[in-house]
Amino acid sequence: MNDLAALVAANEDAAAAIAAAYEILLGGVPNVAGFDFLINNAIDTNYGSNNPNVVFNQENIFINIVNSLV
Image (cartoon, rainbow, N blue to C red; front, side):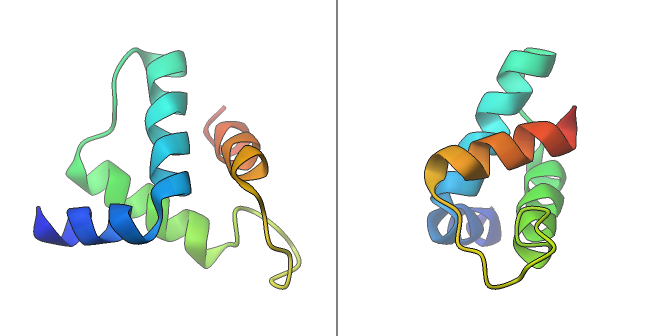
């Protein structure tokens, strides 16, 4: 759980977007493994961008994560 807490603390926008998207789409939130996978995947792929130099704001992070989950 400490690893997840550190991951969320370092990536608050991604974690918030994932939790909100899950709540809207599925009526719940992912488990620990789900959060771990989704946050790390979002970071590894720069939120699905083809350009690793693009920096996304909170709104765009939410949009990209929701799009990837839909």
